[in-house]
Amino acid sequence: MYGTVAKMTIKPGAEADLMRLFDDIAGEIESPGYITDYVYRMDNEPDVYYMAVLFKDRESYAANAADPAMHARYLRYRALLESDPEWHDGEVIWPR
Image (cartoon, rainbow, N blue to C red):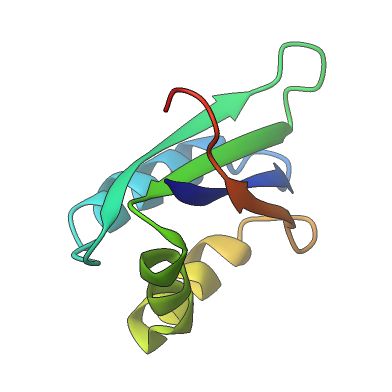
């Protein structure tokens, strides 16, 4: 498996809008190789979120990242963030 972990800081008061948007986007994702994603809100920094996204392999992840539809979805939630997310891509090594 392959994927990314993104650190995001949301704009004040944007959580409800972000959650609605993630709900909407979840119904749109039809990328081959997509497995799942999770979004965490940090206890000690409630405006900081981490998103983990998993794909079958690096090729599926790269194809999704290059998809213009994915970029359009990204722009929709980027508008609710204070700054660009920090992306940390990598191979899932456990569980095997």
